[in-house]
Amino acid sequence: MPGPYAHITMLYDLLDHDRTRTVFSDPACCRNVLTKHFHYAVLGAVSPDYPNLAAGNPLASSWADIMHTVRAGDMLDRGISILMDSDDSSREKQLAWLLGFAAHLVTDMTIHPVVQAKVGVYSENTAMHRICEMHQDSYIYQRMNSGRIGESDKFSSIVAQCSYIDKEVTLDADITVFWEKMLQDVYPEVVRVNPPDIELWHREFIAISTREAPDGVRLFPLAHLISTRTGTSYPDYNNIDRQFIDNLYIPTPADNHLNYDDIWHHATYNIAVIWRSIEAAVLGKSTSPQFKPWDLDTGRDESGQLVFW
Image (cartoon, rainbow, N blue to C red; front, side, top):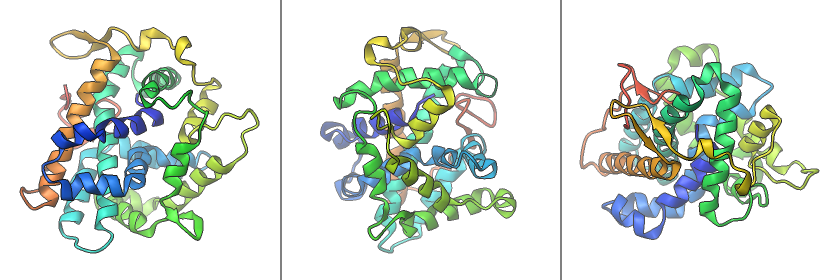
């Protein structure tokens, strides 16, 4: 499955100057919003995994499973609807966050089926999924030309910018309220018994990102969590296991095999399609797209069909 470095690298790929010209029709809308509020987009791109940061609180971390496996497409629908009815000053930040959130969903929906075909069902092969994720993250991270994973805490610092200036551990309320509203509307029965504590998730993010690293490796907090759970380090580029990169089986009737780079490019195409539909709805040029309920762990909708292959 795509890990945190893959989700962040995907945003940088999509926001390449030449690519954004083809993704969006109106530069005054989404393209400018993403440039101006990029840190909120990065937060959105890791938000479905954010509850995992509360590792000592099973009720809190269960929200990650819910956002991945239950009506994920409905979350996009609700976010779009809220923005279509909004005209306040928080709208741009919330749109940037939602575009990042959408990128996470579509990346998972595209790449998870391939990983599942390689290492088995996630619920039964969690350790192998995480190892695969670490190797694929190390591979795709090289597109950033930012050295080795863990050499810089740049991405942690970017997400930390979503905090209040004078309250580092407190997430911007415009995002908290927007995200909570989406969760409340899509999962009311869960919220009643287990209210999401987004502030807790963000506090844990800040706590991990500011903790001294004895070995000098500054992993992104979610990456730190994965490394800790597997008991392994992210591999150097030269030590990447190529079984997770080359000639990967695509579980479609065509029985294809693709390298990870080709799968990655397919994911960027899929995100561009979804981003354009979000842009059209927010600009009032179309109705909300009405995405079907998605399961990010399988890449399938409620009928069992692959959505992006």
